Amino acid sequence: MTKAIRIHQTGGPEVLQWEDIEVAEPGSGQVRLNQSACGLNYIDVYGRSGLYPVGDMPAVLGMEAVGVVESVGSGVDQVAVGDRVAYPMNLGAYAEARLIDADRLVKIPDSISDEAAAAMMLKGLTAHYLLHRTYAVQAGDDILVYAAAGGVGLILCQWANLLGANVIGCVGSEEKARLARANGCHHTILYRDEDIASRVRELTDGKGAAVAYDSIGKATFAASLDSLQPFGVLATYGNASGPVDPFNPAILAGKGSLYVTRPTLATHISTRELLMQGAERLIDVVAGGQVRINVNQSLPLADCAEAHRQLESRETTGSTVLII
Image (cartoon, rainbow, N blue to C red; front, side):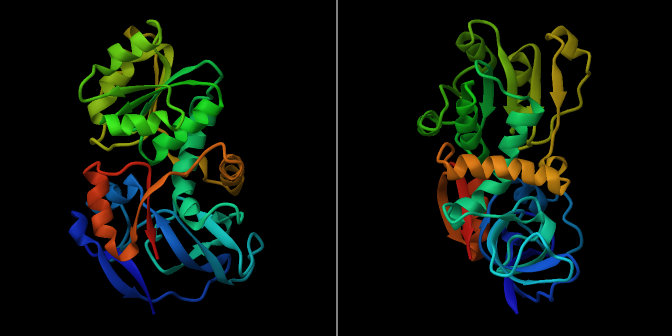
């Protein structure tokens, strides 16, 4: 018997329950993983609230974690017993132990801590596809990053700075602005006090941004479009303020032949090849010290409900890790 955070119905943080579960022996292609830490992500809130489906109830939430392989099923050649591994985008992470397909696991070098490994896979691979695939950032590009002091935001700012971009970050307070600037953000916009699009124009000598990486959704969609230069790209990759309302694509013409995309990490790691391509780049920049994983909050997994409350109330900065 082991323990996990489960929900029996969707709702607020109070539906998260610390319960006993049973974990079977691994089947073909699977491993049993003893986990040491889980990452907290906004997609966990979407699953808990019912915005995203989580399958049959009761359901174990959580999408990323780090642990050690305890046992392997038949046909497993990607990892071995005793390997320290992490994974992103695999529902069921809020648990002391679990079964998982071996081809979803990535070996983690000793130079990266458990806390960093638990926090970096989903958020870091999100930053990877945004910067390298959704819009391939080039040196000199002006880019707009929302929630620049958040888990994905701080990685985006550092990695984009490494690529030579001029990084403009949107934040909710001066404290978060300082944190973003300390992590590669060249300019910050306080979205509660300033007009986002006007400030972006000022900071780019009237040109606008080449790309807007928008995790907020409904509340910032119009400002993101108005911040872009002709042929600019809006990557709306999150819904912190709710889903974007339906819109007439014709507005993109008048605003400069813009592009809008709604990418998801699931597509960008849908094959072992895609997963490892991103993971190897991510591990290189984290192990090499060019990108720091800012774990600014840690709580026991049993206190998951409090972690969700902090995340939704925007009290957090950087990443939150749930310790097992």
